[in-house]
Image (cartoon, rainbow, N blue to C red; front, side):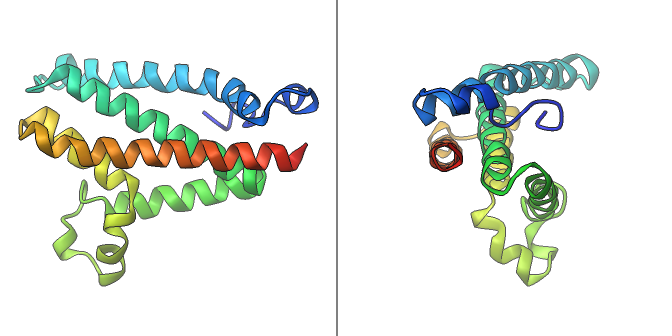
Length: 168
């Protein structure tokens, strides 16, 4: 998404708007696309793969929260480090997350480095939340993924706001 959209709209940065409003105005189109993707993924899961999540609205909610968290995180990398470096860091982060999230490979068979970063990986909590909502599980276990993804979102937006203020 951030290859197509500008992480911070230059016109908004040049105005006297509060940096948080600048970040949110730049984030809004990306969030709409990401939330649309979450709906498409749920529809493919249900009608394309024939899987019926135990909690379909919960699955959609965790997908939407994950989309918001990751869109915010990648925006932050692009705003803080610039688009060129931010894109490289985003790809590196994606690779680290995919290998250490316990979604593709079990954490127990991974090298020590990936086991070490596993609990710090936001995608770990996306995988946990999706497992709970798709396969079924205790609703009490949903609070940790929701809390972590919310903190990632708030932290990323906060840092992006600081960077927008700095860039002005």
